[in-house]
Length: 361
Image (cartoon, rainbow, N blue to C red; front, side):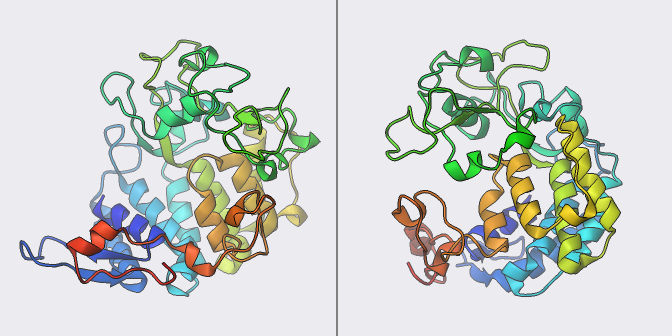
């Protein structure tokens, strides 16, 4: 868990206060930059990998060997961003280790996002969940906001997803750029949960909740049609890591020169499409980096991957890829590169004088 925390700080902030069991009490911790954090996370996980419980053998919701392997695969896939070094071969190696750990795709794509994803076929796919329970872990965090926030202001479809009829009144909608990824070939794709009737595709004013399409990906209903224990706080676990992401990471790392096998990569993509009941499978000529970026959006939207993906592709900042309201422009405008990192909170700097603000803020 400590290595995971430093992984996220490396990714989001590019630096972090560093302390371990050897740090003196009341000492001002030193600050690790990305190179130091990468080295620490990598070495820590490599050191403990063989000591962890085997994949899928730990108590549900607790980290096992596959979780450590997933973090390693993630830092290797993004190593050019973090430390300006390519580690795609290592990414392939760790994707292969995870795949060999006994995971399988859930029978249904949407099983991964239902109230019983801790007991339905999603348990075969989810590598690490953030556990939620409508009674014992009541909070307004990950899946509570995803289910309530996606209920439409027009549709008032909360009952069918196991929350109040109006949910949170259309708080969450999707941009035109996402909606445009779902052409005719994806009309019956299980991953396409867009609801667009009576709605304009654009959101000229974020406060007008009748604009923009909504999606119905997360649900507080079970795979058998039962509803969660509470109509505000949901039972749905957040799938922080799952096998589908590993398949897509393998394919991307292969295309970026990490080795592996082209036919295997194509097979993984087609397995995802077949599971989603999409007959539009691909051939080796279709597998490009641009394709992978779009397919990651279709498969993994609303699972906290997009920012990292766009940074890895060099499209988050700058102006070579824009989306509505990027940089506060209605059609998107270029933004400076320093936005690839978040600003350091003022309170954190006040607590440790060794910690300085990121450039540009």
